[in-house]
Length: 161
Image 1 (cartoon, rainbow, N blue to C red):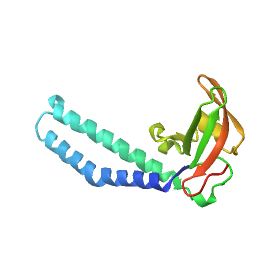
Image 2: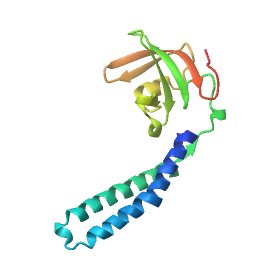
Image 3: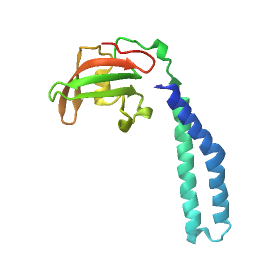
Image 4: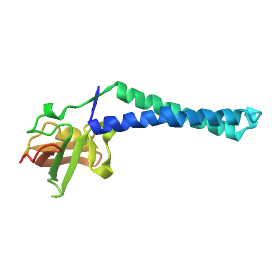
């Protein structure tokens, strides 16, 4: 079971709806046109249409599986005093003094460019359950990072310091 934010659940649902209602019918139409052009063994257009059909079906099945095995998390039931899913954590790398902040999200929402890390990543997993002032140790490829929690914030509340 995976937990998703309402926003991400809605994004996945919208993409799935778009693929089923708009993209796939067009793919089927393109495949029928390419198939009507004759010998399939020497028909690059047909092979390309089949490739696109396969990718589209694969993406549809993947998104359906995500939604089937996911639930929208209710932010009201999350602990407010510790790092958990959907919390934004500011922490200091004690070796370098570098301060960073990330939102802890499910693997399907991870986006480093947007400052979102998976709760299953080494850093995300190490931070989970920690309180402000506590130190977490994350095993990463370069060694062990010691991270001190500076603040925990939530999109729907104020900072816990």
